[in-house]
Image (cartoon, rainbow, N blue to C red):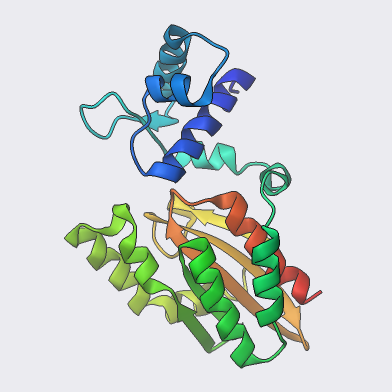
Length: 230
């Protein structure tokens, strides 16, 4: 179990890290988020969060980064996450204008969502009919700029159709997140995915990105897709 104060502090660390991709220090938390606890308390709580495996220090700087365990805790309650983040009116308008129930419009919608999410999009309209876009968004992420990471991402892209074929039948309907060790696309990626049924055929829509993704926003985008097929 984790205290409510630690949980709030961890959510704030995740929020800041998602925005900046930079390790988060206690000073940033106190100054930027106007926390109603002292800097010393924040430091102590962060030390305990590190001991408990929720954050770690990637370099010798004072900043900390969330772990897979932290994101799992953060995502434990989908409903609360989604309530915190709705699509903007401009996003709904854009997607609503694009979305028609034909494959050409699906592809246009996928490109728009790639831009809105900053991730790569895959869309299996039914098994063995795959479209993907936004791959450049992955390579633009700070996490994937090193040569080894580029190779890892490239390998996943090469195997994308094979991976989706493997998981297509086993995915449950509705929105879900696949992160870290539970992510068939690679433990260095996160995936927000939604499975739906349309014209008696299953479809799967997914957003691929780093573990440091805006889950609330991406879940809202996945929910938009799901509702269009209800």
